[in-house]
Figure 1 (cartoon, rainbow, N blue to C red):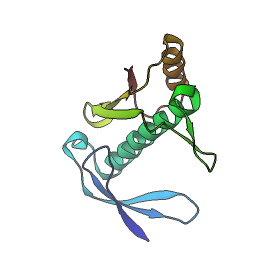
Figure 2: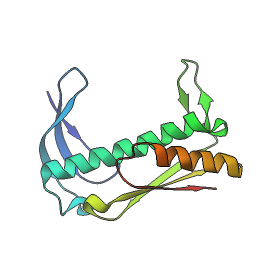
Figure 3: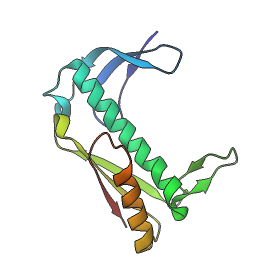
Length: 134
């Protein structure tokens, strides 16, 4: 069944199909946003998926890497503490879009900041990432 996907990283609108086994396939594009304007339907979809995945993976990686950025939920999953704000923005156009992330509401040591930056740099990022910790 086709569903409409509205990425939270841009204003594109795509149609996709979930095969029931967890694989999602692009089946059409309703709108390509200005940030992806130089890309055709499938290329815009692929780039939006990469951006969304990277944004979400950086958040999860932060919670896994730095104890001060980790809250363990009752079900055993980890997330950022409620006192920590994870802000993100994208800059650039098309395939040159890059993610900038910022964590605030926590006092991280230089060692924590270095560990976080190293973990992000070592992860298979799908788009370039810049981190700011304040």
